[in-house]
Length: 187
Image (cartoon, rainbow, N blue to C red; front, side, top):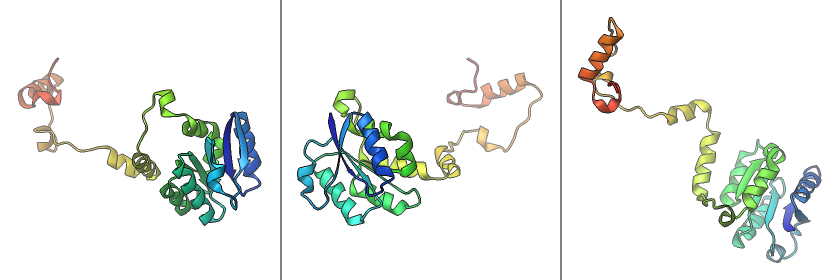
């Protein structure tokens, strides 16, 4: 059975998360913040932190866990973007809003506790994940604008419009005037 340490001040979340982790074959314990934290992190497979507590406390816990390579799952209010960002910057492996934690806890735990060597997965650099998550938070219109790159197409882009009397005339014009790499020729 794997061990998970929990730092969850909210009495609503604590039993729900502990119960869910027990169903995932974890032995759960609360972090004793005033005790020696590094000693508590021995043989721990996961540290779950709620970001509603004292900022200094969870920042210290994240730093201690990262120093001994214990994965950190942090969660907090979706309206407090600055706190979620601070936890990411402090080194938490995964930072999610409360609603995502409740909806996807088993997947998040599996993602953090499955070693890449066991699955054959490639370790994705932390910076890439941060950039991806930042892009995902952008409005859809912005993402669509960034998703398409205009490439100049010789001849086609040189006139605002062209009209042809028949499809055969259009095809003939394409074959005569457009570069083959544009793909408008016959196969």
